[in-house]
Length: 118
Ligand code: FES
Image (cartoon, rainbow, N blue to C red; front, top):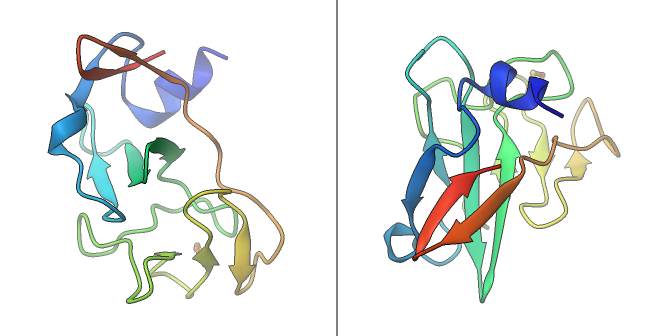
């Protein structure tokens, strides 16, 4: 399980953000100290939070070509490389070259109103 922390660039127990920093249905991309590692995508919907590794299962590139831009108009997550669209809640690719594959879920916990990696 530890390798998702290494491969994302976000170490276990890192403070990712405050819950109130998240906007409803707006994906937020966070990188770790090493900006060349892909980081994660955080998505809040109603009372639930979903975090995905920012790595497309099609060609294992980050979803965002323009940093932080990972959403289509209807709030699906969109890979800018070849147009794969992902359901932001299930992580499933619903359209595009990796249809039916999934983004990798990133483990997190909530403590004192902060989202922490782990
Ligand atoms: S790398 Fe995401 S669609 Fe090809």
